[in-house]
Length: 472
Image 1 (tube, helix red, strand yellow):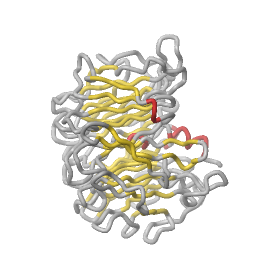
Image 2 (image 1 turned 60 degrees about the horizontal axis):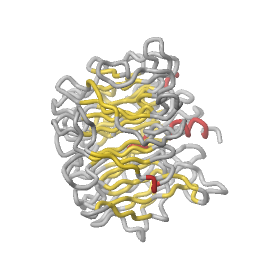
Image 3 (image 1 turned 180 degrees about the vertical axis):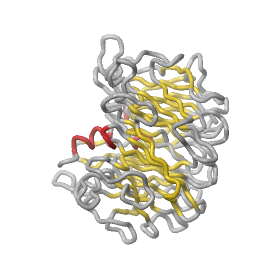
Image 4 (image 1 turned 45 degrees about the vertical axis):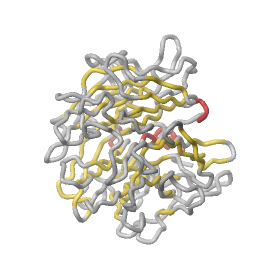
């Protein structure tokens, strides 16, 4: 299939690290505003640029933070962090891929959100491609300094540790925890963290098997975030899905044998107080994967007092669902990126769905984002709207392989009570770019839309991969 190689690369670095809480429920980050790195009351947005050059070092990677304000974000108010930045552990080396995965949360409970950054293929000693994770600390001036997280002692070379990262209070004790995955390991870091010692404790979770992905959020309404580690296995090419819930004394695993997907987000789309698991099954049906829908689909598994019931029939939505713009076509990869937030301020979580392989007219892989709206009856195609660089008011133009919608993030950047859409176009002009559309009572507004390229935020390199990852 024509997008398969590129899709694999994007899969390892984009929406696999979602931590999104139900609208109207207790936050998983117990102090500070999640994603507010400088404590000014506005949420910020952090982008990964894992292919960025750092000085003369090619492809070392960087993180770009744009700070929110009453007018949203701009390139003039930003921080660029690399492993050569003051106080950040390690050093920038070619191929480290610093910024390949990101997740935000107030780990040390000082009121400033911190950022966990993966360097997917950082070498450790004489072991190549092992991977590492670093916490960048929030402060009044934004992100500065950092602390490396302890690694499993038995990581293999090219294991890709830190391919997926999520934060949340996984055991309901009021402290934010972190979980990190790689091709061969899954690890849990228990909060609270300190800047000197890092996590209170850390544990390997080898029983979860080989995985790149993690999704976290409160599915049971008890204030403790559940964790979902989707991964592909022989005999289940649609992904093996289960969630891990804190019972008060231990973690209990529940399998969802009928669920498929590799991407995901958790949010309360029907307003019942329980987070719902939204999975993106973007692969086309084929002989060894008979399930799914042409062009991709999403599935909503509704939460409850103990999480989603495996016996329920999930809501399936695709581009052939009534009300959803477009049509299901091969290699659209609808559902390859997901994010949740309340776009119109009605109290129900909405879902942004990326389809970066979408052809617009004769332009191949230009990409699109569809916004699906939550309601008391759940998520549906009713009123759904699709956006591309061909949409009136959206900056730029559709070009072959832009990949608009490769990453998506719904976040209220201007504190108006409505989530804005941040969409990454990972291949825009060969460098990558991000587009911001502001939320409003009638949905996303294209007036005042902003476009920021890799060069606008001073990233260098032939292919910096700007916006291939956006912190959730």
